[in-house]
Structures are given as structure tokens and as C-alpha cells.
Length: 580
Image 1: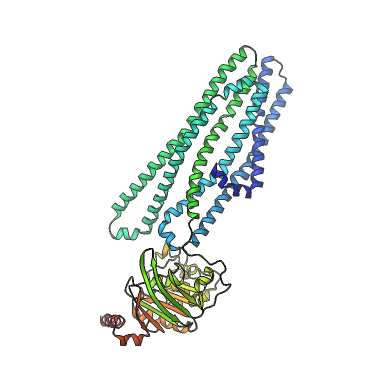
Image 2: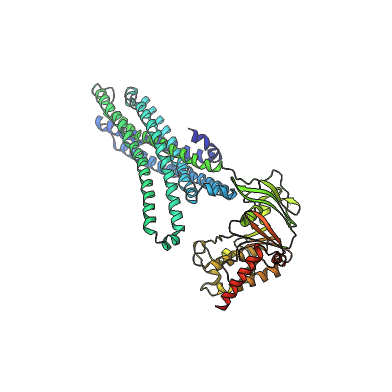
């Protein structure tokens, strides 16, 4: 019953709707008693020869009225119980999604996308069925069983009633044992479904890579193994599911057998009439549903318990990045100060002794070899991770003192791995503010040098670009992502190697536009091609997570270090390309 306790907050929230549904369901259980009673009276009237035409018409009228009443009441309880259960799915799905938006990257390293999708679909559906069909089964089974048994006991024969319920305790023991097996089997099948979801999601996302390596047959074989594993786990669950009905019907059959034996004897000694025996057997038939409903309920409770535990395990995960209890009420751009003593992912050192300052309106360039810590330096500013030792300050305040939403609203970020949505170009560019007018969208795309590419497309800004921008080139994706960030005119613009897929001429044009439009705003650029940062007010050269060189472009050239050697090498490569 722990699952009922865990979901009690929802039942309290929707108590009015559930109460109306339960009352309607209870009235249906009462009206269900009328037809068997009328049938018994008619049979007794025929047997005695006392049935008149008027009695028959009244009996038919009561049957019609009870049928209409049950029809209306069944509509009501379905709307107020089954319909209300979907609200539970809506609430938990929103709670899960909100939780996902608050989690740090380490959470997504632990849980894969397919697994999270399985929690937000299959597990929530199991809880919805429990809050709908489960509640209906519990209420209907208990009320119908109690009302029917009471009617059988007090109006027909208490002896036959006691004999008929002898098999029920044994059924309770059997279903309890089967329920424990169902719990484990469903837990395994849900885990298998998560694994299958992961496999499908990764396979579809990486289909281009799979084809380029000619790996289709191996990937298909790998998928088939996961698919077969999921199928086998589901078949185990199905095996236990299919045992519920036969198990219940076995004990119901035992009740029928006992009733017929005892009932025939009692008719022979004239303790009950034939009509009463028919009514009793009809009532006994009405008990089949409550008994089966108990099986359904136990089954759904086992499934709901498993799903709730899986969902709750996600909701109990806390983000590595937490807001302070009393954050500053507002944020304004100002001097940016890095004072990092050390930072590491888990036990692997990443950055150490990073100290520098950048005035508002200046441009910072960060360069270095792959894996030197450039992107980590930016993610710390975004508070995707928090520092182990040291601080980062904006306008004299540690960034931890600001609200996360305020901090990130100050920053426009273009990551290395640009993500575009499967909508139109227009919707992608103004993602941060869907109400922005078209002329501002046009201006942003011109600044990022992608406007002409868009106009060359058949639908222009209304062109659908497919999932993750599959129909675009790498350079077009980068420039659209830049447009999306630049259109908001952020106080701090971060370009994380966002010009790597464009040619030198386009890069130069974009840099010139940035210099013109961001004179009073801070810009941070990381790059492998040093031409992207030659204009920067401060350039940092990182190696193994430390600053090995710093200064302006001209200063670094005179130091004859890594920067000067790399710049000279890249200039020679560009000259060779021009000659070709």
C-alpha cells in the first residue's frame, strides 16, 4: 500500500472529482442488483402461475430505467476517475521535465536520453493507469462485492453465501504470491525498455556515422540482441500477467461448484426457490468482476510501485550546481575576474592557477591545443560546473551570489556542438525570444554572414532544417547558432570555437561585425585558428589547464612561444591555400 501513500497528495488534490466518480460508481453497483432481482421475481411468478401482464410491464420498465441510470452513471465515473488520472501524468511529466532543466551536465553523463524518455513515457503511463483503472478497480471491487454479498447473505441465503466464499481466502494467498513475482518481472522489463530506448535513440542519431563506416549489419545485429532481450523480459512479465485471470477464474469456478451443490440440495428441501437460486447464481456471476478486479489492482499496484520508484530515483537526484539561499536581486555586467586555484572533473585535474581580469566591453581570446581546458573555462562562467577552489566574479560579486537565471540571461553562448531544433530557420534564430520582429532576425543573420545562404533556400526563413539541422552544412549551423545568440544582444557573448567551419573571408567579416556592434559589451572567443582572436584585448594561451602565455597579439608574437609558432604556421598554410 506504500504506492497509495506516495500518491496521496494527488488524491487529496483531486478529492472532489474522485468523490463524484466514487459516488457514481457506487450507485452503479447498487443498480446492478436490480436486474437479477427482477429476473428472479419473474421466474418465480412464472413458476407459481401468478405473473400478470402488468407485473411484466413494470418489470420491463424497471429494467429500462436501471439500464439508463447505469449508462449515465458509468459515463460520469469514467470522466471523473479515468479522466482525472491523466492529470497525474501531466503533473509528474511536468515535474520531471522541470527537474531535467535544473540538472547539471554530470546528471546527463549518468542517465542517457533513451532512459529519461522511458521514465517520462512508460513509467508515467503505469502511474496513470494506477490512478485511473486502479482506483476504479479498488472502489468497484469493494463496493460491488460488499453490496452483492450483503444482498446474497440477507435476502436469499446466508448458508449458501458462506459456502460460496470459502475459496476466496485461498485466492488471496495465491494472488499475493503472484504479485511479488510480477513486481520483479515488471521492474526488469522497464529496465529493458529503457535500454531499448537508448539503443534506438543512439542508433538513429548516429545513422550517418554508421553508414559512413559500413557498419549497418553489425548495428542491426547489436539492435536485435537488445530487442530480443527486451522481448524476453516482457514475455516473463506477460507470463505472470496472463496467470491472473485463470487463477481468479479457478477459484470462482470452485465457488460456482459449491453453490450448485448446496443450492440444488436447498431447492430439493424447499429452503430456497428456483428463482432465488437463479438470482443467487446471477449475483455470484456479478462477483467475478470484483474478484478479477482485485487481480488487476494488485497487478497495477505492483507496476505503479516499480514506476514510482524509478521516477522518484530521478527526482531525488540533486544538481551539482546549487543557488545560494539569498541571491542578489539583480545582475549587471562589469569587470570579469577569474581567480581559479584548481578545478577538476571528479579526480582528474583540469584547470589550475588561472588568474586574469577583463574589463566590460573588452574581448578575450582563449587559444591552445585540444584538451587544454578552453571549453571548461567557459562552462565555469556559465556555472554548468562549480569551482572546487577559487572564484569567478562579475562586477565585483562571485557568480555564485547571483541567481542562475539572472547569470545566464546575461550571457549568449554558442557552443562547439551547436544544437538546432527541427523547426524553421526563423524559429531557430529567435528561439530566445519568439516575439522578435523579422527585421531583427534579418539583421542578426547578416551580422553572422548567413543571410545570403538563407535567401538562397527555396523557403527562405521558413525553411525547415530537420532534426539537429541535418539539412545544413557545418558552417551554416555555426552561423545560425551565432545568429541565435547575437540577436539577443547579450552583455557577455561567448563563442566557443564557433568559427571553425567557416572560411577565412567569412570569419574576417564576422569578426569585423562583432567589433562594430559590441564595443561596449564583453566578448569571449575560443579558437584553434588564431586569426579569430588577433583583435582581442587579451589573449590567453592554455596548455594542460594552465596559462603559459598572455597578452595582446603583438606582444605574443614577440615572445616567440607557442602562440608565435602556431600563428606563423597557420599564416603559411593560408598563403599556400591562396596560391592553389
